[in-house]
Length: 178
Ligand SMILES: [Cu+2]
Image (cartoon, rainbow, N blue to C red; front, side, top):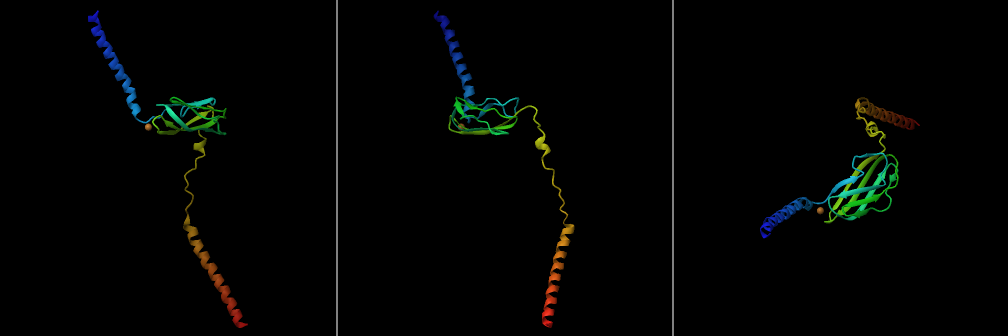
């Protein structure tokens, strides 16, 4: 019996040691600042309907939620205040129209660092995606043709001045005769 417990004990120690090592591995990167791990609705996602709530999952616990905004074609769709549940932040949403949505978050991680960012998604698969590109302004080669204006303006100024001078000169002559 005691002879068998020797190897077993060694095995237990080995398992414990390896589990410590395995357990340590995921902990090591957590020394870096936490950040957003996943979002539902996902960034860049297209959804048939607006989900009834947004869930942001961070790489560590969230200690404080400064702000979560979700705006669509009709403006804000946030319903009530966001709540932090461990590594998740939940935000209930009203129903919303089809279109482009932007979610912004500003929360504080467990180590006191601020985590802020933006997620964009689309509701309604059939919305025209090319509208923005189509309405983009074409390059403006609008004529810088100063050739004519550059000459006409000085000529016009000279002619106007000459005319005024002529009128004044004639008036003086007329007054001098009187
Ligand atoms: Cu940090």
